[in-house]
Image (cartoon, rainbow, N blue to C red; front, side):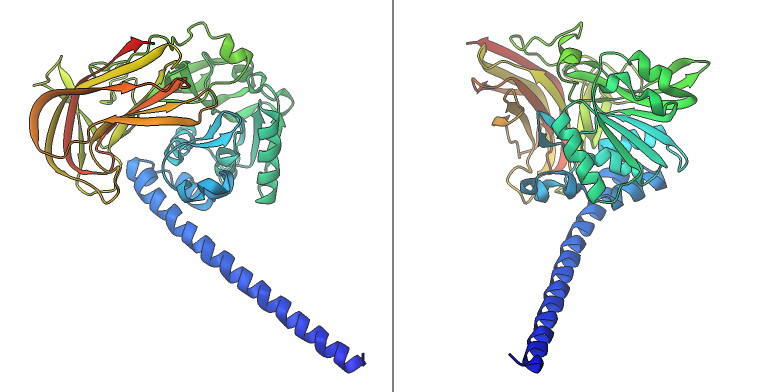
Length: 411
């Protein structure tokens, strides 16, 4: 082959490679544009729209590509405000929770932060957009390795990961200006108290396995000063930390906590023991039971208006549950999706937190005054826990509820 023919073919090859590269770049840009729009919508509705106002936090949530931190099969759900499974019995926290915890810490660009529970690495990435250094510990070695590789690939060089027991902290890099615990201990581990800088802040979800509350601590004179925040539900540490809890759940006797909606111990006008509360108002007076009830109100379809609670339940011991409540409805309009209707859901999960069944009381679409309603629901034999979800679920209108109860029939 002559030199001219060879040069011609080489030139054609280079043009093809360049064209392919340009097409790939355009594809990536188009794909990223699609996700950028989804991120912006999520921030507007589920983060800023729910009260998060810290400028640095909002910028970080809008910058970090959450779809990079979930399995590819869940890309379409990456910018929905909900927890998603990432394997090894762990989940990635909802964007609002990540933003809420980050804002509570009030991080500064000069801060060094310790994170307990790396998980997918998403929370670490959000922090890394704001602070100088993030040190993140994960007890599941496979998750730690995967998160470390992911964060490095995405350019988060100021995040340092370690596989190990997070409750022991990372003493060689202490003290830390901020500590964030993204798994649920029963009480604050002493090494974390020691490794927090004087004047520093720590946020921790504390409590029993299915009843947790965010606590924000500030270290003053060597001691933690607590502030009780909102209810939440986090995956606890695995192994000894979970097995050593003084109060263990009783999956053979499932029940609803604060079903009468009377308890608000921190006086924040939110219902204790129920988490992810959206478009919810606690109302005093004219309640069917006790003094209080709650109202979900939505003026446009598609927006979440709900609250949730975790329940321990063993399908080998419980055959059926009876869900019941007092209900009042006004001017209900269903959303465009089939599930966007008022209902009381129960979602069952197996021992590795895979979904094994979804059931509901409802849906309800007509206006009505207070009325008692309920239904008997079969429990899958492989169920080991459940999530209760009550609300408009994307419908518009007004829905009031009171006296939510769960009883059961043994298998």
